[in-house]
Structures are given as structure tokens and as C-alpha cells.
Length: 233
Image (cartoon, one colour):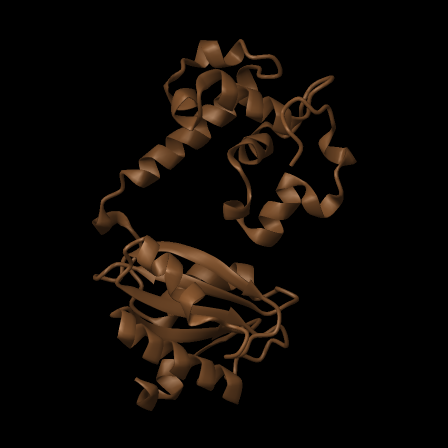
């Protein structure tokens, strides 16, 4: 991304590199704070893109914490920020604050393959390429977060266990569920899917992180490798 002194418009950026398109393809984790704010702002102003205005907000108020603390009126005083944009930014930050203060009892609990489907099927069922996601859970199977890791053909040689478990360790997860899609629409596990599951289960045992299941998502159905192959566990 160009620095904050460079003048450009979002529509001048290659489509695949625009914040909204990157969020759709790569997930919000791929964007920096200025780009996320730009999505909330939607448009910039003469001489400055929405990304530049977002970076200006971060610089002026010394980060997201400063934007959270500043008053609505002060936010409206920033060039390119009116009442509507200030309200959008304040609302998004407040939602994030409320989410961070949720008690474990308020978080989604994953207890079945259908619970997993409820979390991911809408997004995964229509993907044109295979993707592998990891659902991180605490010791009581409360959903902590979902991490999108791989895109493309998946097999045990291309998927590195160290990458699968890295985020689980970083976020103090106790259990994980592996999820990937079949663009063909048929969720039936392949021999490669079974082998990959076996590899990850064994790696998880060494790290004391249990792989609870490997769910495959099709267009209108899912398959649980644990339900189909309980002997792996």
C-alpha cells in the first residue's frame, strides 16, 4: 500500500487490490487498519482516497484506541468525515468493543457438524477453489475465531501442520476443527482428505491440541470425517 502522502483514488487501484475486494477474497485479517476504516467510509474526498482519510484518522488520534476515545464532534471535524461517516466509524468500533467483552457463555458453542455448517456453509459452499479454514475453540468448545489458511488444491504435502496449529497456539485454543470445501459440490471425503486428517490428528496429539473433526462443505450438504471414519480418532 502506498504511504499516506501519496495521492490516489481507490478506483485507480487494480480491482484485486482494493480493500473491499481483498476483504471478500482474503478475509478482514488481510487488511490493515486504514483499509478497514476505508471500507466503513466508502468514499473519500477531493484529493484524498478513503484509505488516506482512514490513515489520517489513525495518525491524528494515535490509533484505533484514540478513535474510540475521541468525541463524535471531534471526529466530525476531520477533513472528509461528516456526521454519517463519523457515526459509521463509531458504531463499528463500539461493536468491536462489545464483542471483546462478551463472556464465554455468550459465545457460540460448537457441539456438532451442523453447528460448524451454521458458521461456514454460507460462505464456503459457493467458493470456486478449495479453501481450508480452521475453527478455534476453547476447552468448552466456545468458538474463539475462524482462520482462513489455504486456497487451492489441498493435500497432506501442501498443508503444513505447523501452520494449522500456529494460530491455535497463538490464541490459546484448546481444540480445533478443520474445515474445507469441495467446489464440485459433493462433500464426500477423498482418500487424500482422510490422509490429511490422520496427519493432523497425530500432530495435534503431540501439541496437546485436539482435532475434533474435519468437516467438508458441499453446495447443499456437509460431511463429517469423524462421523464417517471414527476409527481415525
